[in-house]
Length: 149
Image (cartoon, rainbow, N blue to C red; front, side, top):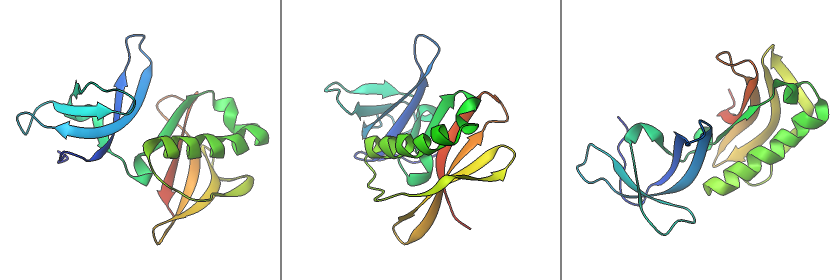
């Protein structure tokens, strides 16, 4: 189980009332019992919310991801290029300063289900932004950054 402390920057992932995934960012306000629900202060919301620990992740470069419906986003070079800007906007919303992304043209296919879209340096490390077709739902793609090897 991940340990959270008051003030930690977090990402809350839950399913909304319509059954759609919902991602919000904020800060840990407190952990009432130390092991149970977490009080979070979501960005733009003056009231605290209580969420279950399994819905909360620390904000790190590798936890910022977009899950988008439409595998055709990988088939068109223009749409692939647009995914880089969408991911950067999500990283900005998460409160991360990723600096300038260096797009890899129309993307570089690195497997049947994955495209390398851009490179960036975060801290001293090199990362690659990938778009990956999910094996669990082939119509959904995940855009995320992973440390380069």
